[in-house]
Amino acid sequence: MSYKINYFIASDKDVASYEKRLSICLMSNGFSFSLTDVYDVLLALGEVECNLNAPIGALLTDIRGFLAETRMQTFGLKEAELIVFSDQFVWIPQHLFDADNLRQYLDVMCKVPMGYSVFEDYNDRIKAHLVFSADNNILSAFKVAIPGIKIRCQHSKMVNPVVLDSSDQRTMMLINIRDGVTDFALFENKKLLLSNSYSCANIDETMFYALNISRQFHLEDGRLLVGVCGDIDREKFAFLKGYFADIALYTGRPLTLTVPQMQHIHTYRCALVLS
Image (cartoon, rainbow, N blue to C red; front, top):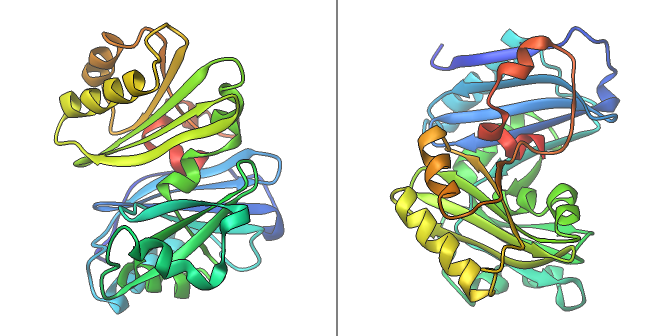
């Protein structure tokens, strides 16, 4: 066994597979996951360490081993999604979108590497398609282990009803901090103003881009609400709060917790699987 379950908290609530939603988010050293039902009850939450760069057969063995050990059934699910972190993406308004031109949309900005596929994810709230690339070598194992799983990326999950509705009266900036990169999304009047990722070696560089975005959109007047998630700790949060007075940890959409231990998990670290 080459995988390691860092934590796994699950409810014993009996829910039919067709009412369950499985969300998995890739990390640099494995993946996090959540299992919810159609009524937004959190049924399971966890994190697994494994080598995502291992040969497909070895990675598939790890995924199947994890699923068997946790007794998670993957057939007949209401929804299943795999969230990847993509550095190649672009939003295309619905009225300009052509499904036959997916690769061309990205080719305008960058060259899609060999071994990568291009995907799209439609967002009904902003009436736009997100086109992005992802590494087939990693995705293939998950596709085999979890039939019908939908491929999404970080910006698919950051543009969601919770943050869009939060921007009804104020401008909302969502910041997702990860290893070497920070993702930003900016919203106002329930519309998406900015969606981008920047290389950030430390919290100082994350702050630089956050301040640059706020100045670019003239948000120094106190009407900005900031949400932050991902690789954030007390020290980093205090540093950000020194520049943004109205800042809070973003933990995803409101969910009903079924197990008391779930209340002690730092859900802001795995907010994308809870959004």
